[in-house]
Length: 383
Ligand SMILES: [Zn+2]
Ligand SMILES: [Zn+2]
Image (cartoon, rainbow, N blue to C red; front, side, top):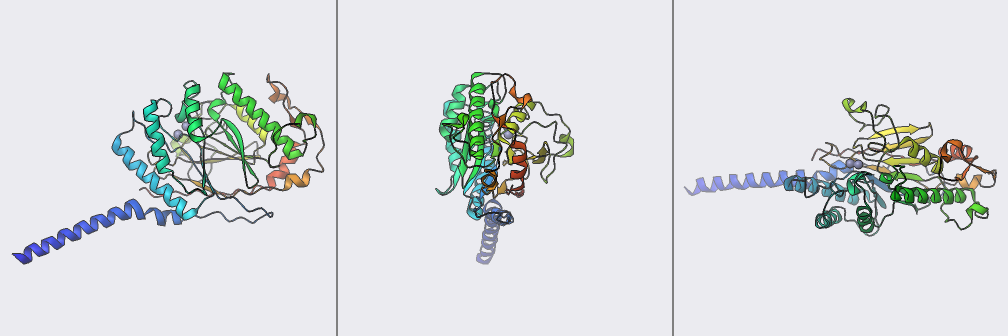
Protein backbone atom coordinates (compact mmCIF):
# COMPACT_ATOMS: atom_id res chain seq x y z
CA UNK A 1 0.00 0.00 0.00
CA UNK A 2 2.74 2.43 0.97
CA UNK A 3 4.57 1.86 -2.29
CA UNK A 4 1.39 2.45 -4.33
CA UNK A 5 0.78 5.74 -2.55
CA UNK A 6 4.44 6.58 -3.00
CA UNK A 7 4.47 5.99 -6.75
CA UNK A 8 1.18 7.84 -7.38
CA UNK A 9 2.50 10.68 -5.23
CA UNK A 10 5.65 10.81 -7.36
CA UNK A 11 3.53 10.73 -10.51
CA UNK A 12 1.41 13.61 -9.27
CA UNK A 13 4.52 15.57 -8.33
CA UNK A 14 5.99 14.90 -11.76
CA UNK A 15 2.78 16.03 -13.44
CA UNK A 16 2.64 19.20 -11.38
CA UNK A 17 6.31 19.87 -12.08
CA UNK A 18 5.80 19.35 -15.83
CA UNK A 19 2.76 21.57 -15.85
CA UNK A 20 4.50 24.36 -13.94
CA UNK A 21 7.60 24.10 -16.17
CA UNK A 22 5.56 24.28 -19.35
CA UNK A 23 3.59 27.19 -17.95
CA UNK A 24 6.70 29.13 -16.93
CA UNK A 25 8.36 28.36 -20.25
CA UNK A 26 5.39 29.46 -22.36
CA UNK A 27 4.40 32.43 -20.29
CA UNK A 28 7.71 33.82 -19.23
CA UNK A 29 10.87 32.29 -20.69
CA UNK A 30 9.64 32.11 -24.29
CA UNK A 31 9.93 35.87 -24.78
CA UNK A 32 13.68 35.78 -24.26
CA UNK A 33 14.69 33.42 -27.13
CA UNK A 34 12.09 35.03 -29.41
CA UNK A 35 13.18 38.61 -28.80
CA UNK A 36 16.84 37.61 -28.82
CA UNK A 37 16.38 36.98 -32.53
CA UNK A 38 15.88 40.71 -32.97
CA UNK A 39 18.89 42.92 -33.04
CA UNK A 40 19.67 46.52 -33.81
CA UNK A 41 20.26 47.11 -37.51
CA UNK A 42 23.86 47.49 -38.51
CA UNK A 43 24.66 50.89 -39.95
CA UNK A 44 27.84 52.43 -41.24
CA UNK A 45 28.40 55.57 -39.20
CA UNK A 46 28.31 58.21 -41.91
CA UNK A 47 29.48 60.94 -39.60
CA UNK A 48 30.77 61.35 -36.10
CA UNK A 49 27.27 61.24 -34.58
CA UNK A 50 26.33 58.22 -32.57
CA UNK A 51 22.99 56.66 -33.53
CA UNK A 52 20.00 56.77 -31.21
CA UNK A 53 18.55 53.40 -30.22
CA UNK A 54 14.84 53.89 -30.84
CA UNK A 55 12.09 51.30 -30.51
CA UNK A 56 8.77 52.03 -32.25
CA UNK A 57 5.52 50.25 -31.59
CA UNK A 58 1.88 51.03 -32.17
CA UNK A 59 -1.74 50.19 -31.44
CA UNK A 60 -1.44 48.54 -28.07
CA UNK A 61 -5.22 48.88 -27.56
CA UNK A 62 -5.35 48.11 -23.84
CA UNK A 63 -8.83 46.74 -23.38
CA UNK A 64 -11.40 48.93 -21.67
CA UNK A 65 -14.15 48.36 -19.13
CA UNK A 66 -16.97 48.30 -21.67
CA UNK A 67 -15.93 45.86 -24.35
CA UNK A 68 -12.97 44.12 -22.77
CA UNK A 69 -13.64 40.78 -21.08
CA UNK A 70 -11.60 40.48 -17.88
CA UNK A 71 -9.99 37.18 -18.93
CA UNK A 72 -9.04 38.49 -22.33
CA UNK A 73 -7.68 41.62 -20.67
CA UNK A 74 -5.65 39.61 -18.21
CA UNK A 75 -4.18 37.39 -20.91
CA UNK A 76 -3.40 40.10 -23.52
CA UNK A 77 -1.96 42.47 -21.00
CA UNK A 78 0.23 39.83 -19.46
CA UNK A 79 1.57 38.94 -22.92
CA UNK A 80 2.14 42.57 -23.76
CA UNK A 81 3.84 43.28 -20.49
CA UNK A 82 6.19 40.32 -20.84
CA UNK A 83 6.98 41.13 -24.49
CA UNK A 84 7.66 44.77 -23.68
CA UNK A 85 9.64 44.19 -20.50
CA UNK A 86 11.76 41.49 -22.14
CA UNK A 87 12.43 43.77 -25.13
CA UNK A 88 13.57 46.53 -22.79
CA UNK A 89 15.83 44.18 -20.93
CA UNK A 90 17.41 42.59 -23.99
CA UNK A 91 17.53 45.54 -26.38
CA UNK A 92 17.95 48.45 -24.02
CA UNK A 93 16.49 51.19 -26.24
CA UNK A 94 17.18 54.81 -25.31
CA UNK A 95 13.73 55.84 -26.42
CA UNK A 96 10.42 54.07 -27.07
CA UNK A 97 7.68 55.60 -29.20
CA UNK A 98 4.11 54.31 -29.08
CA UNK A 99 2.29 55.61 -32.12
CA UNK A 100 -1.23 55.91 -30.74
CA UNK A 101 -4.28 53.81 -29.95
CA UNK A 102 -2.68 53.11 -26.64
CA UNK A 103 -6.15 52.41 -25.24
CA UNK A 104 -9.09 50.75 -26.89
CA UNK A 105 -11.77 52.79 -25.15
CA UNK A 106 -10.10 56.10 -24.33
CA UNK A 107 -12.63 57.63 -26.68
CA UNK A 108 -15.57 56.91 -24.40
CA UNK A 109 -14.26 55.78 -21.00
CA UNK A 110 -15.57 57.45 -17.84
CA UNK A 111 -13.00 59.19 -15.70
CA UNK A 112 -12.86 56.23 -13.35
CA UNK A 113 -12.27 53.74 -16.19
CA UNK A 114 -9.77 56.11 -17.73
CA UNK A 115 -7.79 56.17 -14.49
CA UNK A 116 -7.82 52.39 -14.36
CA UNK A 117 -6.60 52.20 -17.98
CA UNK A 118 -3.80 54.65 -17.26
CA UNK A 119 -2.74 52.76 -14.15
CA UNK A 120 -2.48 49.51 -16.12
CA UNK A 121 -0.63 51.23 -18.93
CA UNK A 122 1.94 52.58 -16.51
CA UNK A 123 2.47 49.12 -15.06
CA UNK A 124 2.80 47.33 -18.40
CA UNK A 125 5.06 49.96 -19.96
CA UNK A 126 7.16 50.76 -16.90
CA UNK A 127 10.72 51.51 -17.89
CA UNK A 128 14.04 52.46 -16.38
CA UNK A 129 14.72 56.17 -15.95
CA UNK A 130 17.32 56.21 -18.73
CA UNK A 131 14.73 55.03 -21.28
CA UNK A 132 12.35 57.69 -22.49
CA UNK A 133 8.78 56.74 -23.37
CA UNK A 134 6.95 58.96 -25.86
CA UNK A 135 3.27 58.38 -26.59
CA UNK A 136 1.29 59.73 -29.53
CA UNK A 137 -2.45 60.31 -29.81
CA UNK A 138 -4.64 57.86 -31.72
CA UNK A 139 -8.33 57.82 -32.58
CA UNK A 140 -9.07 55.18 -29.93
CA UNK A 141 -7.46 57.39 -27.30
CA UNK A 142 -9.58 60.49 -27.93
CA UNK A 143 -12.10 59.36 -30.56
CA UNK A 144 -12.31 59.85 -34.30
CA UNK A 145 -12.42 63.49 -35.29
CA UNK A 146 -16.19 63.82 -34.77
CA UNK A 147 -15.93 62.27 -31.27
CA UNK A 148 -12.85 64.24 -30.23
CA UNK A 149 -13.49 66.81 -27.52
CA UNK A 150 -11.26 69.28 -25.76
CA UNK A 151 -11.75 67.39 -22.51
CA UNK A 152 -10.69 64.00 -23.97
CA UNK A 153 -7.74 65.57 -25.70
CA UNK A 154 -6.62 67.39 -22.57
CA UNK A 155 -6.82 64.38 -20.27
CA UNK A 156 -4.63 62.44 -22.72
CA UNK A 157 -2.17 65.32 -23.12
CA UNK A 158 -1.89 65.75 -19.37
CA UNK A 159 -1.28 62.11 -18.52
CA UNK A 160 1.29 61.57 -21.26
CA UNK A 161 2.77 65.03 -21.20
CA UNK A 162 2.28 65.53 -24.93
CA UNK A 163 0.87 68.21 -27.19
CA UNK A 164 -0.75 67.83 -30.59
CA UNK A 165 2.24 69.14 -32.55
CA UNK A 166 5.82 69.33 -31.40
CA UNK A 167 9.38 68.59 -32.36
CA UNK A 168 11.45 66.52 -30.01
CA UNK A 169 15.18 66.60 -30.71
CA UNK A 170 17.37 63.85 -29.34
CA UNK A 171 20.99 63.33 -30.29
CA UNK A 172 20.52 65.76 -33.17
CA UNK A 173 17.53 63.85 -34.59
CA UNK A 174 14.29 65.83 -34.96
CA UNK A 175 11.16 63.81 -34.30
CA UNK A 176 8.04 65.60 -35.42
CA UNK A 177 5.12 64.32 -33.32
CA UNK A 178 1.67 65.04 -34.71
CA UNK A 179 -1.86 64.41 -33.47
CA UNK A 180 -3.18 63.20 -36.81
CA UNK A 181 -6.80 63.04 -35.56
CA UNK A 182 -6.66 66.85 -35.65
CA UNK A 183 -5.66 66.97 -39.32
CA UNK A 184 -9.25 66.76 -40.51
CA UNK A 185 -8.96 70.11 -42.26
CA UNK A 186 -12.46 71.29 -41.33
CA UNK A 187 -11.31 74.41 -39.46
CA UNK A 188 -12.68 73.16 -36.14
CA UNK A 189 -10.93 74.96 -33.25
CA UNK A 190 -8.68 71.98 -32.42
CA UNK A 191 -7.68 71.40 -36.06
CA UNK A 192 -7.03 75.09 -36.57
CA UNK A 193 -4.80 75.29 -33.56
CA UNK A 194 -2.81 72.19 -34.54
CA UNK A 195 -2.41 73.35 -38.11
CA UNK A 196 -1.22 76.75 -36.97
CA UNK A 197 1.26 75.12 -34.65
CA UNK A 198 2.52 72.85 -37.43
CA UNK A 199 2.98 75.77 -39.73
CA UNK A 200 4.96 77.58 -37.07
CA UNK A 201 7.14 74.54 -36.53
CA UNK A 202 7.78 74.16 -40.25
CA UNK A 203 8.88 77.77 -40.46
CA UNK A 204 11.19 77.38 -37.48
CA UNK A 205 12.64 74.13 -38.80
CA UNK A 206 13.14 75.58 -42.25
CA UNK A 207 14.94 78.56 -40.74
CA UNK A 208 17.13 76.25 -38.66
CA UNK A 209 18.01 74.11 -41.66
CA UNK A 210 18.92 77.10 -43.73
CA UNK A 211 20.68 78.92 -40.93
CA UNK A 212 18.43 81.90 -41.62
CA UNK A 213 17.80 83.20 -38.14
CA UNK A 214 18.75 86.73 -39.18
CA UNK A 215 16.12 86.65 -41.94
CA UNK A 216 13.00 88.65 -41.11
CA UNK A 217 10.56 85.75 -41.05
CA UNK A 218 12.98 83.71 -38.98
CA UNK A 219 13.50 86.18 -36.21
CA UNK A 220 12.25 84.88 -32.88
CA UNK A 221 11.58 81.39 -34.21
CA UNK A 222 12.59 78.43 -32.12
CA UNK A 223 15.78 76.77 -33.31
CA UNK A 224 16.12 73.07 -34.00
CA UNK A 225 18.81 70.71 -35.21
CA UNK A 226 19.36 71.59 -38.89
CA UNK A 227 17.91 68.42 -40.34
CA UNK A 228 14.75 67.03 -41.90
CA UNK A 229 12.56 65.40 -39.24
CA UNK A 230 11.28 61.89 -38.75
CA UNK A 231 7.50 62.36 -38.83
CA UNK A 232 5.56 60.26 -36.33
CA UNK A 233 1.78 60.10 -36.24
CA UNK A 234 -1.02 57.61 -35.72
CA UNK A 235 -2.78 57.69 -39.12
CA UNK A 236 -0.72 56.88 -42.19
CA UNK A 237 -0.31 59.51 -44.88
CA UNK A 238 -2.84 59.23 -47.67
CA UNK A 239 -2.67 56.04 -49.74
CA UNK A 240 -5.40 54.49 -51.85
CA UNK A 241 -5.16 51.08 -50.20
CA UNK A 242 -2.51 48.70 -48.96
CA UNK A 243 -2.09 47.29 -52.47
CA UNK A 244 1.29 48.92 -52.99
CA UNK A 245 2.64 48.02 -49.57
CA UNK A 246 5.71 45.88 -49.24
CA UNK A 247 7.27 44.41 -46.12
CA UNK A 248 6.91 41.14 -44.27
CA UNK A 249 3.93 42.16 -42.17
CA UNK A 250 1.90 43.71 -45.00
CA UNK A 251 -1.87 43.12 -44.94
CA UNK A 252 -3.15 39.74 -46.18
CA UNK A 253 -4.27 39.63 -49.81
CA UNK A 254 -8.00 39.84 -49.05
CA UNK A 255 -7.54 43.12 -47.17
CA UNK A 256 -4.97 44.76 -49.39
CA UNK A 257 -7.32 46.06 -52.01
CA UNK A 258 -9.91 47.53 -49.66
CA UNK A 259 -10.05 51.22 -50.46
CA UNK A 260 -9.10 53.55 -47.64
CA UNK A 261 -11.35 56.41 -46.61
CA UNK A 262 -9.64 59.76 -46.24
CA UNK A 263 -9.69 61.01 -42.63
CA UNK A 264 -10.68 57.60 -41.22
CA UNK A 265 -8.21 55.03 -42.46
CA UNK A 266 -5.55 57.47 -43.61
CA UNK A 267 -5.25 61.26 -43.43
CA UNK A 268 -6.61 63.29 -46.33
CA UNK A 269 -4.68 63.90 -49.56
CA UNK A 270 -4.53 67.55 -48.70
CA UNK A 271 -3.17 67.05 -45.19
CA UNK A 272 -0.59 64.57 -46.48
CA UNK A 273 0.56 66.99 -49.12
CA UNK A 274 0.90 69.77 -46.59
CA UNK A 275 2.96 67.69 -44.19
CA UNK A 276 5.28 66.62 -46.98
CA UNK A 277 5.66 70.17 -48.28
CA UNK A 278 6.14 71.74 -44.91
CA UNK A 279 8.53 69.26 -43.41
CA UNK A 280 10.12 67.14 -46.16
CA UNK A 281 10.44 64.30 -43.60
CA UNK A 282 13.33 61.90 -44.00
CA UNK A 283 11.01 59.14 -42.83
CA UNK A 284 7.37 58.79 -41.81
CA UNK A 285 6.27 56.25 -39.20
CA UNK A 286 2.60 55.54 -38.57
CA UNK A 287 0.22 52.90 -37.19
CA UNK A 288 -3.58 52.56 -37.19
CA UNK A 289 -4.02 49.91 -39.93
CA UNK A 290 -2.60 47.20 -37.63
CA UNK A 291 -0.62 45.83 -40.58
CA UNK A 292 2.88 46.61 -41.72
CA UNK A 293 3.44 48.64 -44.85
CA UNK A 294 6.51 50.06 -46.51
CA UNK A 295 5.69 52.62 -49.13
CA UNK A 296 7.32 55.57 -50.85
CA UNK A 297 5.46 58.88 -51.30
CA UNK A 298 6.23 61.04 -54.31
CA UNK A 299 9.24 58.84 -54.98
CA UNK A 300 11.01 60.62 -52.15
CA UNK A 301 9.51 60.08 -48.75
CA UNK A 302 9.55 56.61 -47.24
CA UNK A 303 6.77 55.65 -44.84
CA UNK A 304 6.57 52.61 -42.64
CA UNK A 305 3.29 51.70 -40.99
CA UNK A 306 3.96 49.65 -37.90
CA UNK A 307 1.81 46.57 -37.17
CA UNK A 308 -0.16 46.40 -33.95
CA UNK A 309 1.60 45.34 -30.75
CA UNK A 310 -1.50 43.56 -29.43
CA UNK A 311 -2.26 39.86 -29.75
CA UNK A 312 -5.86 40.80 -30.03
CA UNK A 313 -5.24 42.47 -33.38
CA UNK A 314 -2.82 40.03 -34.94
CA UNK A 315 -1.04 36.77 -34.31
CA UNK A 316 2.40 38.26 -34.59
CA UNK A 317 2.57 41.60 -32.77
CA UNK A 318 5.62 43.47 -33.94
CA UNK A 319 7.82 46.43 -33.25
CA UNK A 320 10.53 48.20 -35.16
CA UNK A 321 14.06 49.04 -34.13
CA UNK A 322 15.67 52.11 -35.65
CA UNK A 323 19.05 53.76 -35.35
CA UNK A 324 18.60 57.29 -36.63
CA UNK A 325 21.64 59.53 -36.57
CA UNK A 326 21.98 63.26 -36.83
CA UNK A 327 22.71 64.50 -40.32
CA UNK A 328 25.44 66.90 -41.21
CA UNK A 329 24.44 67.48 -44.82
CA UNK A 330 22.47 70.55 -43.91
CA UNK A 331 25.46 72.13 -42.27
CA UNK A 332 27.55 71.50 -45.37
CA UNK A 333 24.92 72.96 -47.63
CA UNK A 334 24.33 75.93 -45.45
CA UNK A 335 26.81 78.12 -47.30
CA UNK A 336 25.49 77.30 -50.73
CA UNK A 337 21.78 77.74 -50.19
CA UNK A 338 20.19 80.39 -52.34
CA UNK A 339 18.45 82.76 -50.00
CA UNK A 340 15.15 82.81 -51.72
CA UNK A 341 11.78 81.80 -50.40
CA UNK A 342 8.60 81.09 -52.26
CA UNK A 343 5.24 79.42 -51.83
CA UNK A 344 4.20 76.47 -53.93
CA UNK A 345 0.91 77.26 -55.59
CA UNK A 346 -1.02 74.14 -54.59
CA UNK A 347 -0.36 74.43 -50.90
CA UNK A 348 -1.27 78.02 -50.34
CA UNK A 349 -5.04 77.43 -50.23
CA UNK A 350 -6.69 79.90 -47.88
CA UNK A 351 -4.36 79.68 -44.94
CA UNK A 352 -2.22 82.71 -45.63
CA UNK A 353 1.36 82.72 -46.75
CA UNK A 354 3.51 79.72 -46.15
CA UNK A 355 7.19 79.80 -46.11
CA UNK A 356 8.82 77.21 -48.28
CA UNK A 357 12.05 77.62 -50.06
CA UNK A 358 12.50 76.78 -53.70
CA UNK A 359 15.77 75.21 -52.85
CA UNK A 360 13.99 72.69 -50.60
CA UNK A 361 13.69 70.13 -53.31
CA UNK A 362 17.31 70.06 -54.33
CA UNK A 363 18.20 70.39 -50.70
CA UNK A 364 16.15 67.45 -49.66
CA UNK A 365 17.37 65.13 -52.36
CA UNK A 366 20.77 65.69 -50.82
CA UNK A 367 19.44 65.19 -47.33
CA UNK A 368 17.70 62.05 -48.48
CA UNK A 369 21.04 60.45 -49.24
CA UNK A 370 21.94 60.62 -45.62
CA UNK A 371 18.90 58.72 -44.35
CA UNK A 372 20.34 56.32 -41.91
CA UNK A 373 17.36 54.98 -40.09
CA UNK A 374 17.20 51.38 -41.02
CA UNK A 375 14.62 49.06 -39.65
CA UNK A 376 13.59 45.49 -39.38
CA UNK A 377 10.38 43.79 -38.47
CA UNK A 378 10.44 41.57 -35.50
CA UNK A 379 7.52 39.23 -35.30
CA UNK A 380 7.13 37.50 -32.03
CA UNK A 381 5.67 34.18 -31.12
CA UNK A 382 2.01 33.41 -30.90
CA UNK A 383 2.18 33.46 -27.08
ZN1 LIG B 1 -5.60 50.74 -33.73
ZN1 LIG C 1 -6.37 53.92 -34.92
